Image (cartoon, rainbow, N blue to C red; front, side):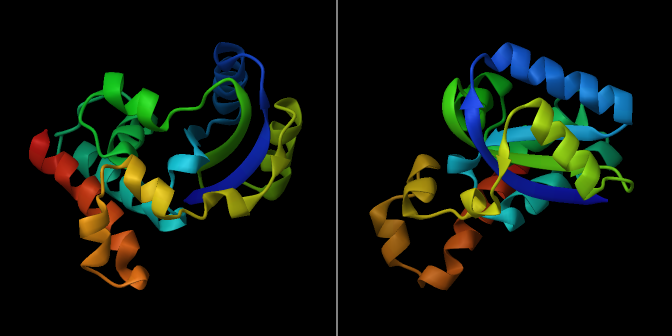
Length: 167
């Protein structure tokens, strides 16, 4: 149902970039959400955000009017788009980009077609988060010292789960 990939490229104009994605999404009947991959701590980060967003729609507790935007909120650990978009949204210039596709029919051929339209190169390695990623979420050195490196991902999951509480 979902597929997550990473890509690299140069975004000349965010508005035009998003318009291409929106048209592609509508034409192929898929939901596509994009993120600044430098703020994503692995595929599980986005899977968790998707699951929380989907649950919020099932419970009628969603904040936004689209599943893609709801995922963006959860992935950012924020409750408002005005803070979520600057935190994990894409920007002009050389970029690492994370894509989340929602549709049972999403194929590598379709993904490659979109990447071609956007002049991007697929690179899933951009999804690998690090300590800098965690610090962008406000996680402190003290917090990092309290757990093993293998558990760092859980700190992101906590930020995602907190969105339900602060809603």
